[in-house]
Image 1 (tube, protein in one colour):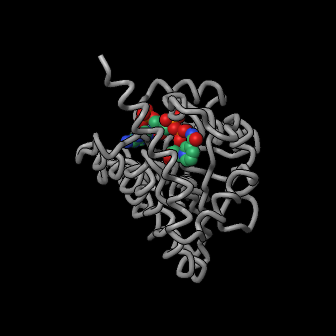
Image 2 (spheres, rainbow, N blue to C red; image 1 turned 45 degrees about the horizontal axis):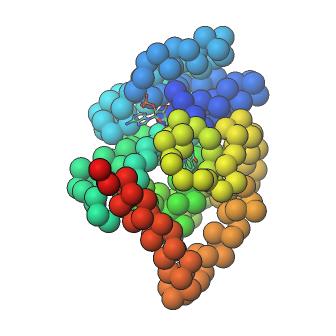
Length: 258
Ligand SMILES: NC(=O)c1ccc[n+]([C@@H]2O[C@H](COP(=O)([O-])OP(=O)(O)OC[C@H]3O[C@@H](n4cnc5c(N)ncnc54)[C@H](OP(=O)(O)O)[C@@H]3O)[C@@H](O)[C@H]2O)c1
C-alpha cells in the first residue's frame, strides 16, 4: 500500500488530493498547522489520513516530522509538497514582511521537507516527490510579484534537480495548476479565468502523479496559452500585461477613496 506525506493537507487542493489518494488505497501522513482540519480529515477518511501537524517554515519540526512519520508508518513512497499561501502585492503597497512570509511558506516551506526526504530517497534509489508550484510562476504577472517569484523559484529548483534525481531513480513531478476554487482563491476579488472545482483538480493531479510526465498542468486551454506567452519577447508580453496592471491601480485607487 502506497505511503504518502502531503503538506498543506488541511484545506483546498491538498485535502482533496489526500481524499482521492485514500480512495485509491493509499495511507497518508497529513500535515498543516491547523490540527482541527487534520483531525476532521482523519475522521472523513476512517483513519487512513493520519495527522502530523506542523509549520513547514520550521526546519527542525519538519525534519522531526519526516523521522516520526517513517518510524510510525514505514518508508515513504510519495511526498506531495503542496503547502502554500498567497497575498496579492501591488507596487504601491510593496513590503518586505509580505514578500518574506510568502517566500518562507511557498519556497522554504517546500525546501524544508524536500531536504528532509531527499537523502532517504537517494539512499534507497526510489521514491516520488511532487512539488505544487503554479502557472503564476511561468512569468511575472501584476499583483503576483511575491507569489509568482516564489513559484518560479520552485519551478527552477525542480528543473535543476530533475536530471540528478532521474539518475538516482527518484521520480520528480512538478504540478502547475491554473485557478482552482479553494479558501486561497476565495480571497481573490477579480474574475478568475477557467476556475476549476477542487475535486476536478485533485483528479487531474492524482492522474498526473501516476503518469510519466514531469509537469502536470491544467486546465490545458488556459495553461497552453500561458506557455505560449512564456516565449513572447518583452515588448509583446508587456503589451498583454499592461492593461492588468492599469486595472489593478484603478481598483486600488477606488478602494482607497474615503
Ligand atoms: N487554488 C489555486 O488556484 C492554486 C493555483 C495554483 C497553485 N496553487 C498552489 O496549491 C497549493 C495549495 O493551494 P490551495 O488553494 O489549496 O490553498 P489553501 O486552500 O489556502 O490551503 C493551503 C493549505 O496549506 C496549509 N499551510 C499554509 N501555510 C502553511 C505552513 N506554514 N505550514 C504548514 N501548512 C501550511 C494550510 O493549512 P494551515 O493554514 O492550517 O497551515 C492549508 O491546509 C499552494 O501551494 C498554492 O500556491 C493553488
